[in-house]
Image (cartoon, rainbow, N blue to C red; front, side, top):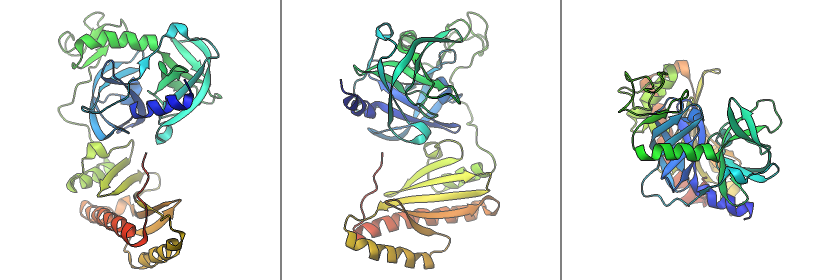
Length: 366
C-alpha cells in the first residue's frame, strides 16, 4: 500500500487533543469505538478538548488511564463517520521496516513523517519499545505508528532529547492487551495499576484511592466536583471569554492559548507572561485570486489602520489578520471585555466586507 494512500486514509481518524497543560495527538479505532492516546497527553484531566477533520471541536471524556504503558482511552464523538483503521501484529515487524508516524507536532495539523524501524524491541524500564528514525516531536505523542500495509503497529510515545531522530513507540500488542482488559468495563472510569496491572474501577477501588490487589495508591479519571481554574491574567482572560458567551473549555488550546470563532472569523488569544502582553489575532479571509484587486485592497487596509483604535489590519502570507495587543497590567474585566468584544465584532464584519468588496477568498483551514 502506498504511503500517500495510507496518510490520506488516516487523516480523518487522527484527533487533536488539548488540555490546559498542552496538546497532543490521538487516533480513533472503530473496532473498539475509542480514541487512543498517551496517558501523559491527558495528564490528570478526566475531560479534554478534541478536534478532527470530520467534526468540530468538542469535549471528550477520559475513560481509561494507564501510567505504566502510557496509554489513555477517550470517548469518541457520536454520529461521526470515521474511516476504519486496523491494529497490526507486533510479531510481524522487523528491523528496517518502513513506517510512518502521523500526528500534530507543535500544533501543526496532520503531519506525517516517514522512516524505518531502527530496532523492534528496544527495552526501556521493563517494556519493549519500537525504536524509529522517523522524526517525531512534542505534539506527536499519542499518534499512530503505521506500517506499509496501513496497520497500526505502535503508539508514538516519546523521544530522547538531543538525539538525532531517536523516537520510540509502544508496540501494538500492549495496546491490544489494554483494550481487551478495558472493553468489558467500557463506559466506566478506570485506571490500570502501574504496580500490578490490575484494572481499578469505582466498584473495587479500596478506600477511594488504593488498588484492591496490591495497595498501591491510584487515581481514577473522575470528573472533579469543582474544576481547577487558571490564576492571574489567564483566569481573567477566561472570565472575560465566559462573559462574552464563549465556551472556555472548548476555547483552551494548551498553556495560555485560546481559540474562538466569531461568525466566519477565527480568533487566537495568546498570553505571554514573560513579556507581559496578551495578543488577539483574528484570522479573516485570504487575498483575492484576482491580482488587479490586491492593490486597492492594500490601500483600503492601510487607510483603515489610520481610523482603527487599538486594532491593526495586516497580511500574514495569504491571510488577512486583525490584531490587538494589550498589556496584562492594564487589563481589567471591563476593559478586557470591551477590547475583546470590539475585536470579535470587527473581525466578523471585516471578513464579510472584504469577501464582498474585494473578492477575498475563504480562509483555508486544516
